[in-house]
Length: 433
Ligand SMILES: *[C@@H]1O[C@H](CO)[C@@H](O)[C@H](O)[C@H]1NC(C)=O
Ligand SMILES: *[C@@H]1O[C@H](CO)[C@@H](O)[C@H](O)[C@H]1NC(C)=O
Ligand SMILES: *[C@@H]1O[C@H](CO)[C@@H](O)[C@H](O)[C@H]1NC(C)=O
Ligand SMILES: *[C@@H]1O[C@H](CO)[C@@H](O)[C@H](O)[C@H]1NC(C)=O
Image (cartoon, rainbow, N blue to C red):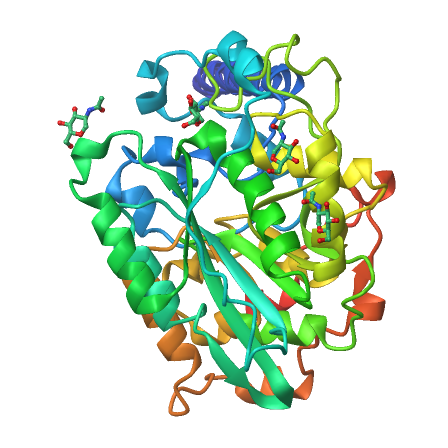
């Protein structure tokens, strides 16, 4: 009996220790959660994509090769998990950059007219008159010849396609800031322009904070040199774009009506944390929320909207973040940008829902519109897999039994307060691969 009681007491001690340990773990967890919550509260995400992976921004060139090799699906929806991701302090490399001179920016921002050094005046005329159906405009920098080349050979290919669809492509460039990094850069662009007739070069420095100038100058160019274009896709060079899906999205749309579709970010708050790449002080933007804007990667608009934006953007004061600036122009013309329902599929929270994204699965890409942060070989491989008749999806029967559709009317929803966080759900279709 005594023996039994002693045994019980020992057991009780062990149980007690375990309970204490559990309590400790709970406390620790609660602290982490509280920290995360506070971070979200005070360091709201402007960009919903992980800033580490914004390869197209000139200042992130120093990031690790591992980050680059991972395939990232562009966020097309808002989710709490993504907010957390974006709010995490990252990019140690950027911490060493000199702070951005906002005072200088404000002083210089009336200087917003720069000349076109390389033009493509014939870009939007086919046989002297018929305007192309789709203009693909890709932001690029002089040194990224390889990226331009792979875009030219894959999703940015110019030509005539079924149903009278004609596609033309231009690359938007400024003057490199560090010209000793690429000697004879101007000759390179001249030769490229001669060979491919797709270079637009303006006389401003090609920096991250001058991307807004790229936006306004491109729109002005469209207004004057490509006025009859029906639709425009504008995006980055390190994305994979499924142009067939974009064309399907546009089918039946009216080019002479307003249309602006993309990865629309609503109710984003300006970042007031100095260490962020997207830091904006109050004296530059005093509001507490940005207008709705299309996140990087890419968006689609009608020619009519582009022309309207070109004059609206002249009225809007320059703002150093180009996506947000365009959102301000949209606000100026009173146009609500639309988030395509199909774009939600890009918002799959990683990695739990889609760990297979590490592999090239053409069936997956077949249903996407824009995939973000791909390397040059990845873009090339993906495009070829997608267009290879020998590659078939291993569970094709399942897929085709419920065909994927980009039907516009019932999948397109108007942006609004309610869509910000509520309609986010994992899309089952991708979990099956
Ligand atoms: C920019 O140039 C256009 C035409 O060249 C002119 O109409 C406009 O006033 C200029 N704007 C500024 C701010 O200099
Ligand atoms: C410009 O590029 C050269 C060559 O890559 C490099 O050595 C130099 O440090 C760069 N200068 C600046 C100011 O970044
Ligand atoms: C933008 O380009 C202009 C003209 O080259 C240059 O003076 C200015 O410093 C650039 N601004 C930024 C923020 O890089
Ligand atoms: C756009 O083009 C129209 C017609 O050519 C012209 O009247 C208008 O001033 C242009 N707008 C801008 C912002 O350049």
